[in-house]
Image (cartoon, rainbow, N blue to C red; front, side, top):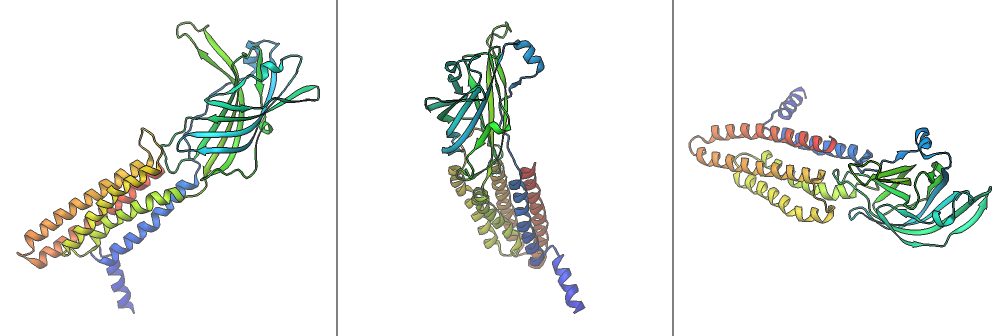
Length: 362
């Protein structure tokens, strides 16, 4: 029994043995899903949100004592259209205002708009009096486009900022106020492929400089910011993209596991892996957003393609070496070739694991 155990350990740590190489491949196959799961479980977004100037004590001093405070709120009922890849959203919502009717008129209030959006439907106001304050609500449907970033695709999550603005008043006349309860969303809203996580609200103002040389030429408007955070509902898209890619890549490594004398089989597997990666690019392209920069998927694909090409080139060189030297000294040639083959296998596996981990986690 002891001799059997020693023999097993020697074969396990013998880099030229098939058992060692198979164990390494199994370890990599077990390791990669962990890295992907770590990344998928994190909230990852680089989507920008508008930076509003806060309404603080200093700002209120600038606006003067007669500025009117108007409380703003939003209730999202549904998303008739929610297309992240095309950056197109259709929102069915209720927008409401609470204000002092003696300080500001309803005509001014209802001139609100959505930044980077277009209101396609706005109902007449439903008005009631609550605690001597006018409460006016509108049923609205609006289209929205935002500055979404897809650098981490398909590991990215997204923010959906909705900026409510009134371009017909200045902060000297009216400011918006919000609180956490002002922003609500219909329970159990789950756009296809996405899951609502949380939300946040803010209010302030934004000034636009109209003349770079004359700071007095500017326009200011009160704004309310409503932000929705959405996370991936599942890992389906990542699995569809990366399982075929890494399956083809493991074919490249499998060529190093085969016997060094099997030059035809090693060469065939290496070229099959390279061809599969080249062909699958057309499939990936249909699932990716139309952007002009490299995403995580592009970086991984280019690396795996380069990896498969290097593996293919090495197999050509090893085949050439075997064909030239096999007739001279077959045993020594095969032994030497096995050692070279094993060393390259270790280097390639370390390269695959290291670069993949760096691209995904960094």
